[in-house]
Picture (cartoon, rainbow, N blue to C red):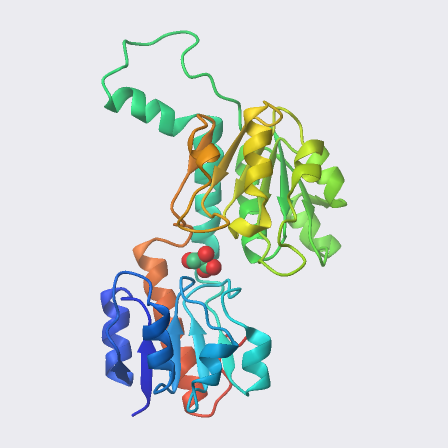
Length: 318
Ligand code: DGY
């Protein structure tokens, strides 16, 4: 049987399935694997199953003489040096599709949460500060009928757009490869250059992968063209947004609010974002449902099995 290193403890059914198929080496913890643990495991493993909290770079790959596949337990794989892996003939896989709807749901939870001030309202009740109904208490912004701007119209962006129909929204989007006319009609979505999406949207939601092109894509200049009444939502990768610029725009009232699930330097959250009342800040839980996390894990197992059996991995990225 092949030896597989699993960097974090995955849900029970996933660990059981992995143990049934492979010899598991190392000790998966609830915390991220340390660099030393990863290097040690890489030196013995046929496959690495890693999460987004482990960085698999050329150094790790150089210490991995038997390694055939790096299976990422996420759709985003910016933590893996894919070029270095490809050069060494190592397959890299991810877990798309199964988390699309789950992540789109969370983007909507953030939209509704920040615009209707749900966390603030919950705190008011929970902390015993609520003195009864009041006409001007916790006034938020209407969501229905607004203009939604989607940056990145891949699987998750499209799933977010589908939900917008229920809120009677206008959907504008920007993406690298615009949709076909039929897809645009089905989603009631209109392609525009990014500055125009930013200018016109009441809500801008980000769904791009983190690449050299998208790193820092939403910075001071981009935030400056957004409406003062607009909200920014990010469930993609933190480094797509310049957090200091975002904090400044929010502090100066140049933006109404932000809902974030991801951060530039996780688990560090920019202190100025923490201090603001008009931010809803989640701990990177976009795909965090029991059903989805189990499906992601079984996908990791299938990707590894395929490569080790000499077949094409179902979700190969290189
Ligand atoms: C992903 O899949 O990339 C998420 O961010 C982690 O669940």
